[in-house]
Amino acid sequence: MKAARFTRCVAWAVALAVAGCSDSETIRVLNEPKPQPPTAPTIPADQKQYRTLAAMVPADTGGKDNAHWWFFKMSGKADVIAKYEADFDKLIATVYSSASADEPISWELPPGWQRTEGSAMRFATLKAPGGEAEVAVSQAGGSVVFNAQRWWGQLWGEDKATEITPVNLESYVRRQVVKGRLILRVDMAGPKDPNAKRPMMMNPHGGQ
Image 1 (tube, rainbow, N blue to C red):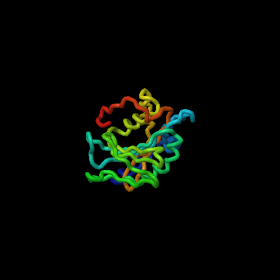
Image 2 (image 1 turned 180 degrees about the vertical axis):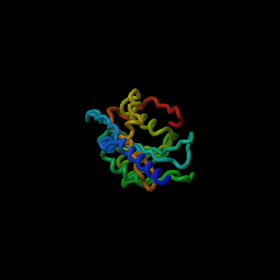
Image 3 (image 1 turned 135 degrees about the vertical axis):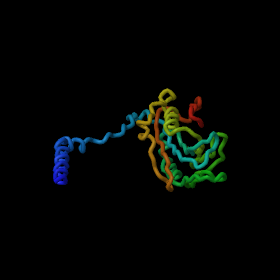
Image 4 (image 1 turned 60 degrees about the vertical axis):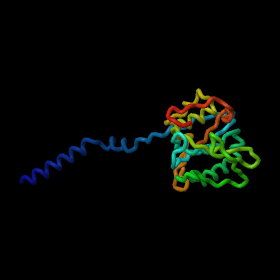
């Protein structure tokens, strides 16, 4: 008898729980649209005179100031960058970093490209045929947002650097996997020459 009463009580509890949620409420929850990430603002064509393509590759060993990124950055007039965009992507597709002190980063140059030695701020400079464009290879620290803000500031002015936020970051920084390694590809355009000399934006978290 006790077992029968317990079974009836359980059945009533289940029935009441089901009755407490109407079909319309269930449908409403299931059909709620997923929030869409914010899109990048539309930039008029006359404001896209210059462009920056960059790739951020996680470093296996810390360099100066415990830097943890390898940067491959090509910037200049938009038409020139577009001309060599395919070569840039081919280059990035061959990049491989390791824990080796002798060869911490390696790549394969596209046909016609040449490597020149770097400087205090660069590991190497990769020049396109005829020297019309170049890719600067360097190592530094800083968050993804900080570096994206730095490059945006070069294209739009330092006062606009903070227009890049974690909310709209995906509009300019895309993830891709190369040889099993995550690489962040950056693509930005703006009205200012990113190669013009200007005061350096300091990183409050270390690295430059």
